[in-house]
Image (cartoon, rainbow over all chains, first blue to last red; front, side, top):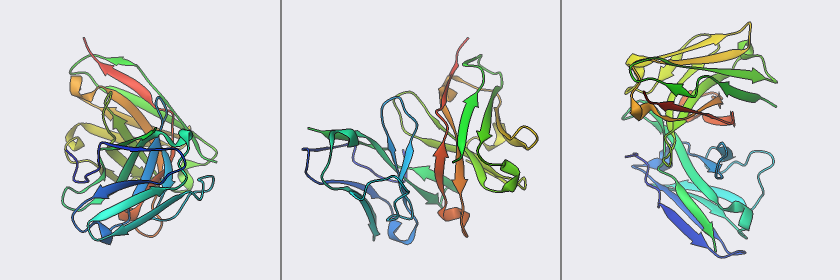
Length: 108
Length: 123
């Protein structure tokens, strides 16, 4: 099991806002990164340093990180956003980079 | 744009050594960057395996450290992974990725990924 806790699934209607959380002890003091993985494809970085977007990632994607929860927010959700999303950071207790268990985003 | 492509046997027998190569294009690995390996068992999440800097320094996940070797071949612009004494639990899609450190590698992230290669451990 991961030290980062993500909900297994999130469902949202098209055009609405999806919020995917990543929980961890005092995660707000760490740099958190997010990846999108569509079926049969490699992960793609969609957010780094919890709120910076790589080039090519729509402004609909945003991020925040405070306390024990980091959040990836996707506004005006589209069918093409349907994917698994993973958070990632360095875990000092286990001396390794870790990923959350992943959240499957379903667009209704 | 950095591009990565993994290659290697798709089937490895238990107790043998898994060997994969990642060919990097669009960037010279001797110029910098960390180069990492991540794996994903079928139907499961991502697991970081290890990373290596162009200078030779390496990091690896503690649970695999005793079986793992990561190396760079700057003449071929390739990153290699060797995992010894494999079992069925090592069956996974293996990804090669570039890892951006910035000023603090503990805050780094994987910014470019290969397409991945499935390795099955079975007799």
